[in-house]
Length: 453
Image: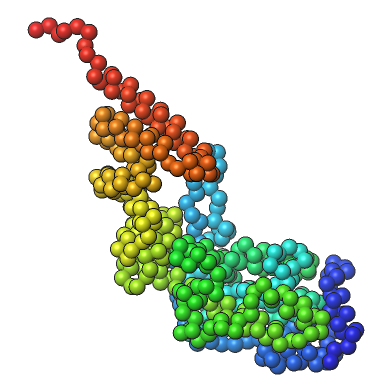
């Protein structure tokens, strides 16, 4: 059993170390009974670095199988959504853009140089007081997935863990995460900076799968947590693992603090298993996205909502032809009434963009029967008849119908955040009607003098 001094020593590790560089840690004198029990329970060995030691767990899994990226998929995952036009504001560059693009491309196309990463931390809000006490990484190896996990037995082992992670990132500098751009990697960057002795590893690129997953599956699932995706999209049981006895994420920090206070080490075994399953889920998720983003014809049993989400994701990244294919496939599979109208509106917009105005007009005329879309459809038809067909009476009729339809929207909608937008639409339609009325008067004005015969 651990002595009282051991327990207080673990709590004392919360204090920042004095000095600009930590001292080399002496060889530990034999590990406590708890630490030996933990190592046996999770199948770990003691890894030693110049900054001390930590526990290392290595496992290899035949599933998910190795997955090489299809042509164009990496560009879709890296490219940001098309920025909205804003006067005087330059579009934000992609997060991954760095100098030396010619050197980065071979790394991106070689999945064996990728490193999947997931962390378990002492808090879920981040900040300088949050530690990543368990860092899990994985990479493709021998057709399967090699998983390696670094566990801090107390906070004094952080430097040792970070040093070993830096070595792995030096070998595989393309990082793949799930919400890692927002949480995991910024947290690790801050921990590296706080060591004042280990440089922050330089990444060649960072692929975050949360955003494409949210775009594709949020309409159907609502929640796009990795566990939800494993259950409803990835079929984790078929791949060889499930979450039946999984550790709740919100309890993980408390389990680690309980371990530091000298309580049971058993819950930490569940935390290690949870982290390992997250890494396997992350690799399987890339395989699923790779299939969806590279598919030209959606002939499988994909859900209509998923295909519509995929269509919008592709459209925002400039893949307009494939976005249209996915949108039409989504309608063929079936969409809820409200989303089907949105899909028709998107198809009309795509047709207009290609210059196929007659196809767009056909869809807008269909949408006249939908109260929610009548105003927008009338406005588009007014523009079409006024600019393309030079039919001023028809354009004026549709513009007035748009104004009337906009005025009949429920008061609740006008009191919501959409009210300023509706006000701008009223002003735009008012100016359009005034211009069309003026043009109509000029066209119908009778001559002052009869022409000579």
